[in-house]
Length: 126
Image (cartoon, rainbow, N blue to C red; front, side, top):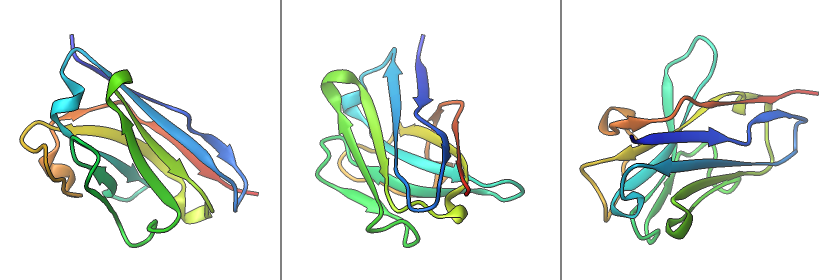
């Protein structure tokens, strides 16, 4: 049974930091590119960061570049997103996803991802 489970969300003040984790089981995590996506209330889902299967290639959307860092630990089948310098505009539900069709590069288009977690909420507020 394949499972994708995010954790680490919560309430944080502006300027604060969080580390999100995404534990994957039931498939060979190391074979696939992976990504983090965000959905704010009343808005569509947007691609935040993605990473290739070996971690050599990473991409970040402009609004988070320099503040967020994506990484992976294939030995733990876990994807991470380090969020620094958080702003109220970063509030939303953060989702982890795997791309079954790509490994050596990644894309930020959520339509290209097939396996999704349930999300973890992040609220940035004073």
